[in-house]
Each structure stands twice: as structure tokens, then as C-alpha cells.
Image 1: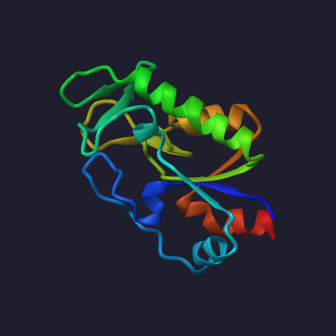
Image 2: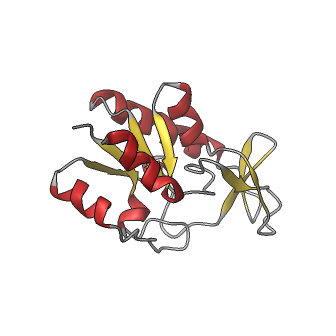
Image 3: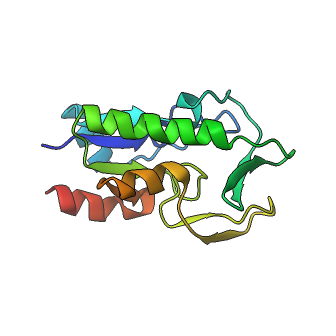
Amino acid sequence: MHKILISSCLLGTPVRYDGTGQQLLHPQIMAWQQQKLIVPFCPEVAGGLPIPRDPAEISNDKVITNIGDDVTAEFKLGARKALQLCQQHNIRFALLKESSPSCGRNTIYDGSHSGTKVKGMGLTASLLEKNGIQVFSEQQLPALAQTLA
């Protein structure tokens, strides 16, 4: 069986910008946990950002917080660490938090901090995909399960 990189927040770990998790309660996740296939990871924390932290969005290829701080370097570092982890453990699949500036698979926020989502990928999701790792959002969990079956 293949190991799966999963956003820590989807496992309920309070690592999100607001200090919360967003646990994805699903029988498939529980089965993977029992099989010890899950490798939890938060690229933002791995990149050195605190919990809680100011919300950030991608704007003009930079990651900017709602108070104007440029946190691109931390987001890029977290993405590189995610890729290294995947390479070390031969991970070929990732289940990441949709709309995150790190983990968004299909959508991200538009950079205006107005709550508007646009088509796009977060920095970690994009780097993983460019390196041959299949990325799924939590909304695509059935597709990931089918791919692994």
C-alpha cells in the first residue's frame, strides 16, 4: 500500500491560521490511519509560521498576509519540506486542504482578502504536482480512494 501525505488540519490538528483544525471525519481516513498509511504534514508550520498566524493569500506570485506582510519565503520553505518528505517516504499521493495558499488543489483565495475564491493551486500543491505526486483535495477523497484501490 502507498503512504499518503495528508494536511494535518484535515486530521483535526489545530495548525490552521486561526489555531483550529478541520477534521475530516470519514471511514476511509480512519482505515488509512489504522493501516498506518497517513503521513500528516502542515507546510505552513514546517515553513516556520506560528499558530495562530495572520491569514495569507496568494497575490502576484507572492503570499501576503491581511496586514501586508510577505510570507512567501515561509510558504516556499514549507512546500520544499513537503516535497522532501514525499521523496524520503516514496509518497506519490497527497490529500490537501482546498483553498489554502499552501494546499489548495483546485481553488485559492484571490489575494484581496475579501473571501473570493478563484481557480488556482497553493504553493505546496503546485510543487508536489510538478514533481509527479498526485494531489487531491478533501472534496476529492472518493477519487483518491478509488485511485489507491
